[in-house]
Amino acid sequence: MKPDAIETLLAEKGISLRALGPLLAGEFDLSAPANDVLARLAELTKGTSLEARVVCMDPVVARALLRQGAGLEPVPAGAALRNWITANAGAWHGILAPSAREIPSVELELGGSVSDIAAASAAQDRKTAQRLYDAYMAREGARIGIGTWHEYRTVYSTDNYISVFDPAVRRDHHLGLDLFCDAGTPLILPMDGEVVDARIIDVRLDYGGVLVLEHAFDDGKFWSLWGHLSFASARRWKPRDRIAAGTAFCEMGDFEENGWWLPHLHLQLSAEKYPDFTMMPGVGEGAFLDIWDDLFPDPTPLIFG
Image 1 (cartoon, rainbow, N blue to C red):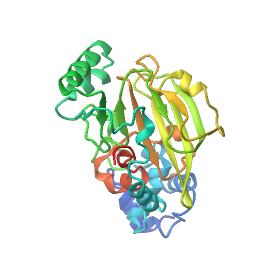
Image 2: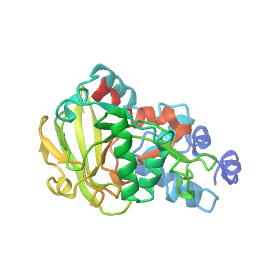
Image 3: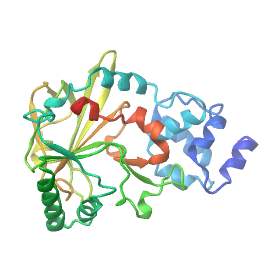
Image 4: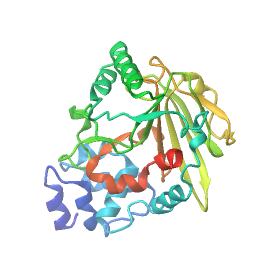
């Protein structure tokens, strides 16, 4: 039987997962692997209003929210990775050649002044998206467009983006860094890495070609996701391949191969290794910024710092 307090909370239709944290801390080990925590949560919520939502939950995010609600550090490895990023500001500027810091760039306010570009791209209107983007970049005299980390974007407006963790909020904030360049632009690995995943997700508005790498830093590890690549980039590598820093290891994909978006790189860091990186969200809830800051820290300082 569930304790009365948990029973009461589970009876609430719109209960947020974070609100369960204080009570669930005594029910099971929140330091267990994320899949185990989610399995226990599924058992506990069976037959309740939360059951259907739990089935759709990302286990890594679910555990972080439960830990935060229980007063624990949401992502134990998060602070160390953020500190490492701060200490290594600018170390990844060579991701492009010449240095990303030397190429004229401009921030694309995809949730604001240039939301028409984002809307055309999300509508898979290639001609309009490219025309608007080219005109804007010409006016700004820029060659790199930057889609910022944690930017609010209006294109995430359908019911598909209502949060399963808290139905009162939606997933409408970007969790990676976007670098918009010409299709075929080579990307140079800024530090040694081992391939964890290399695949093609040939679904419109998904990643297209995608690579996930594992990196060692100080006494820990972190993971980098490189999305919207060419198909050839994903086919070039396989899990457990080691890639040396300085290798031109992938290229930005064109519309037909990158999920039908304007050509760009989606770069996202993770402090946690996912059981399945296809579950790692590229957009998240603005209400969970404190979680995202630890789990998917901003890579911008590494490149432009």
